[in-house]
Length: 470
Image 1: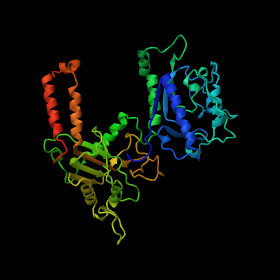
Image 2: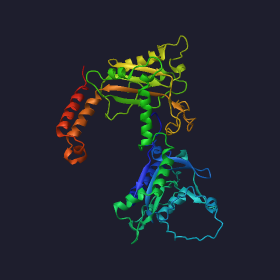
Image 3: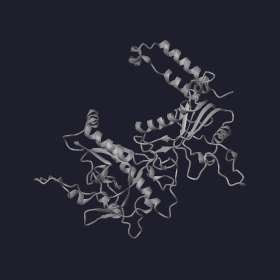
Image 4: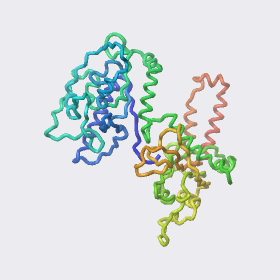
């Protein structure tokens, strides 16, 4: 997938994870503070990978960790479970129940003095009960402080730190904290002491729903999430499969499945690799030759097969499909008399452009290519993965970010590659290390040691078919 920050959703599960996380987020926050200083050079790290932008009920922009944390009752000290950025006193006062009310109020934990300078620097509690944060320069991090207004930071003593929230200097989103109320962090009773207790908690519908709700909240707003969900990765694989199999599903001049398999599996080869560019990066105003030339000499698709690094490997045969490009963009529309910037710009049809591009990239490879007008449909319930594209899958300058994407162009390929030699040899090596006597289910199914030895020999013979050579 092209462009955008590769977002990460951070999970902190347990009290010690909270201590590590507090130090981690304090370090991220310190780096953000330096990034807002005009004297500092541009940062090498992209904070958008870990942080998200938001807006409070009063329209103030926020920048908070993309974080879900779970801990036990009593671990928050003076930190509120809902955080301090989105607090709305008027909403708290809106109670529908008209009957008799009984209020049970816990004694407040004293705030650690170490956090006082942090709070005074970040904002102020207004008379309406709403915490007003100061503006965020460049939409990133806390505001820079001048020497005259910067308070002398307190250094926490070991004795003053009781829980991780005593030294966390970062504001959290209300969806970040998930408290397990049935167990206490400290005290003599109600402690979580056994693995089975924690396992049981995560099986309870209440906590499963809370976690799922928080996961959906954070994940669905991401464009290029790195954390891997079956719902998402299966959608990508289905999109690729829909593209790879298009040649034998065409209405006119289809290639049969047998013909496609024969082209890719000559000389004893039976396995292929898969790769795709989802979506294909064609910007408004660009032609297909323009976009292909921008790819340069690099492999034009991202590997979808577990074959490791493909650099230095050789492709023997490939079936390539590019779909979803409007016919008007297939060829370059140069002004008469303008010399073409490349041989691709001189082609008269899109099919010729694609075939010549593949020939230039891999001149000794047997290639079958198809250029289709039909894009890949990604309407619901397809996951929201391409919000940086226009509704028709184009890659704009960002002005349409968030628009519902209905279809996307896809560039995909099945390839018989020398990378499979290494992958199949590694698989054979892993299987050799297995002791079938430790896996009763295999023995019960009738698998014999001689059968396994024969299969390993066949696997190694198959791997030899993919050695790089003539």
